[in-house]
Amino acid sequence: MTTVLSESQVRFLLFLAEAIVPEVGDLDDTGRRSCVAIIDQALQDRPPPLRRKFIFFLSALRWTPVFRHGVPLDSLRGEALNAALDWFQDCPLPLVRKGFWGLKTLIFMGYYGRPEVGEAIHYTPSFSGNDFLEGNCRD
Amino acid sequence: MIEKEVDVLVIGSGAGGGTVASELSSLCREGLTIAVLEQGPRLSREQFTGRELEMARTLYADSGGYLTKDMSMALAFARTYGGSTVVYTGTSLKIPEAVVKRWSVPDLNYQDLMDRSDKHMAANGVHPLEPDKLNDNNRLFRQGCDKLGYRVQQFPINVRGCRGAGVCNFGCPNGAKQGTDRVQLPAAEAEGVQVVTGCRAIRVGPGWCEACVSRPATGLDPIWEPGDYRIRARAIVISGGAVHSPALLAHSGMSDSLPVLGRYFTAHPALILVAQHDREITNYHGHPKSYYCDQFVESRKFLLETCMYFPFTTAKYLVGYGPDHSRMMSRMDRLQMILALAIDPPRWENRVTADGNGKPMVDYRLGPEVLDALHQSMRTAARIFFASGARRVHAPGGRKFFIEREEQDQIDSLIPRSGIRTGKVGVASAHLMGGCRMGRDSTDSVTDSHGRIHGVPGLYVADASLFPSCSEINPYVTIMALADRVADSVRHDLPELRHS
Image (cartoon, rainbow over all chains, first blue to last red; front, side):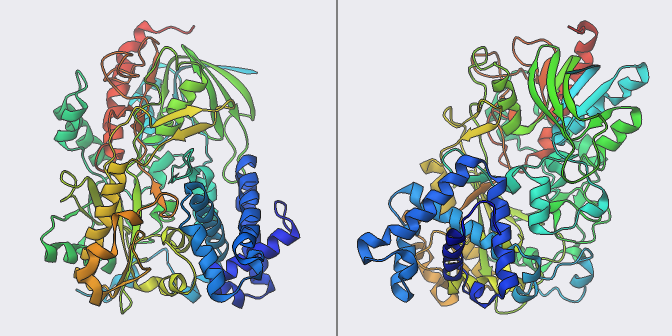
């Protein structure tokens, strides 16, 4: 349940999330919900105009590929999908590049912001980190 | 509207406000009243969990991603008891003489700044970290620089009993970092200074301030009841930082009488650069920032520092996505990181203003000289990474996601200048400076060299917004030294100042 995004926007966001962080595809329902909840919270925290810009950008991202590929972005797969995403990332228009960066940021926040991701990425900090340095430093 | 009256009001509790409060606190013994207003919450020790999103949301404005108007740079500044001194890494450097000379502020003496810097560095326990507490991420940087013949130096840091939690940017869970939350504010409170958290200053004028107190979502209750306040004070010191201080003055209608207000904002725009080693290295255990390389500050306009960030922060500053990105992120224990900071020139058009609700708006353009510096910093960092034994390097403006060790002789062609495109490459800043620059009069500045706002008796500024141009090093010691001067001027002026 989200407060900012509609169900169809969430589905599209999860489709994008899997393209951007392939491990999202391995998450169970709880993991996906947790991911979406983090993104939703981040959007709630942002000013309404920025939220509106983001939702508009999501729509643009979904439908712009129709002009080139004849189908929306979430109907593309493999190389075609990557080519479309690369186009947004490298777009000549700075505003589009910034929008894509914002989208990636939210997706990374959703996936890597979950405390439980630590083990999977070999990130297990400790409040007494100096204890781990003894005998571990290599010159 | 609840009425309050104090002798001195300080707005902000970070390096500037905390120092002013502490320096003036002895006045409480003479029966004077001092209050510090802090927008953010005051946390108990247990609330410093080190968890990335939770702490970013609690401690930072916009979770640390406060966007400039054109959305090309994310600004990180804290709102909490102690301000940004809670979330920096404690690196404590004195400003170079050449920078103070360039500032050419009448009556601002370099030796005076050094003496005041020394005083606060001693109070905050500044010293270099012991060699056995340096992790591989830091040692490898030093080795790489040594191998290439680059000048590299160790940061003095302000910690007491550091246990190496490595989460300095989310507040020290062990209470080791000696920010104003640990040193100046408790000392001031012991003398009778009131620190009101959850309190947002809305407007200021000569002898008055309107503010609003509310209960924060996290943290201890404010010491004043929630509500709207009008506070009368003989002296008001604005120490909200380089974003909030100019915005507060602009929202208070002072832009017309102070044409330079908000102008010449600088930020040390920064890139996070990442390399991967073949083996595990110690990186997120231990203090994250021990060395810096200032070899290229004059010639190429960038400074390199060690750093170690957290999973989400790291992920968002890598350019790209998909399997390569995941491959890099999957082994956080093999990552080496360098922070590259551009020495950005002060520009009239880089400016802080306020919207109708008083929310700061930062209009900053990453100019060609900054992009040039960031480009050169990427090439240099890549060389340092490889010299320290890295397997592969990620350069955000590179032609490919990874530059492999075997390709290190092609660094220049693999990291072209054209790759540095705003929006694609994530640029961040945590050193926010300027906007209320010191100078001669209102035609060239907002304050004099003692932080007195031109033409408004009893109103002062004490924070990094005073810097006429960027400090070219981590700024907090310089902020404290300047705040110490401002406290002296308040003490000097007080007998002439009356409640309005």
